[in-house]
Amino acid sequence: MKKGVIIIGLAIAFVAASAWVVLSGGKSAKAIRTKFRLGGAILTLTGIAALSSCETGVTGVTTCYDPAPPIDHIPPAVNDVYALFPTVINEAYDVHNGAVLPFSITLESEEDVIFVISTPEGEELQRVRYLSDNNQRNEFNLIVDVGAWRGVAELHIYFDYAPELGIFVEHSHGAYLLNIID
Image 1 (cartoon, rainbow, N blue to C red):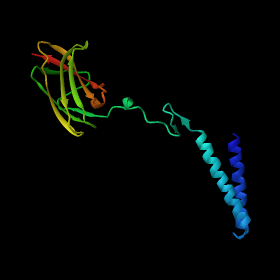
Image 2 (image 1 turned 45 degrees about the vertical axis):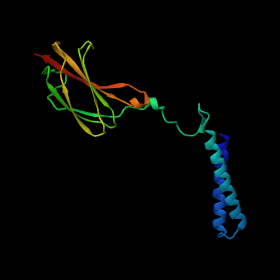
Image 3 (image 1 turned 180 degrees about the horizontal axis):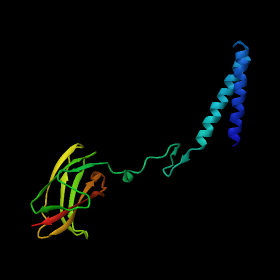
């Protein structure tokens, strides 16, 4: 609070010194010297006030900025998934073993695309992993192979982020309902 009052007082004095310089036509050395000294004092106190709000982090480094999040807290990239077969929300698509389900997926980084077909109870029936080598639109053809299982199943699409850093977290894109028939 004291720093703020001092800076405001100096600012008022600076305005008065500026008026003195203008009224003297810029010929008064004492007015110009006073204006420069007040300006320097304002800059110095403003800098000190700004530095006093900085914090020393856990690494011992003093910074006035919010630190970047740790590498293991980087949010996953946003990927666009397009099913190239007829899909209706909350309705199962009829497929049989050997059916090809085409997908077009745009990836924002180089990562794996993982297709998992599971029962509604979560029992995994099929897992297929494709490696994308670029961050462009990729065409994937999932061939359904769930063995003898029949009925409604869920198809989840996952993405593998930063495996080179030892971070292996699967992020679900959502489920497509499949009705496995003969």
